[in-house]
Length: 64
Image (cartoon, rainbow, N blue to C red; front, side, top):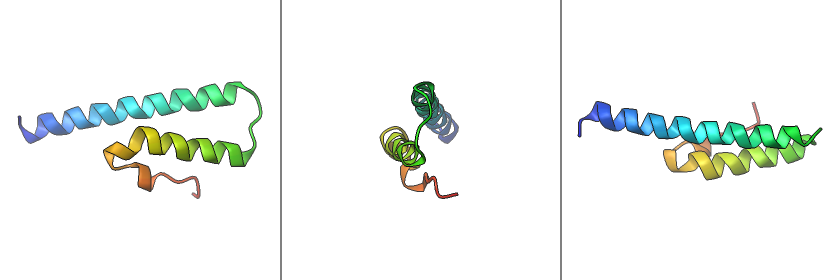
């Protein structure tokens, strides 16, 4: 398998994980107003669950 194929496959998996994370956040927002602390905690949880295995979970932060 060439580098380009591996990279494209990894990129597709990251996109799928990000899309799943966005869907989960949309579900949270649909429940109504959410305190900032709750939203921050959910973002951190989703990032850890969905993106950590792609080397991105430790870089996701709501501090910016």
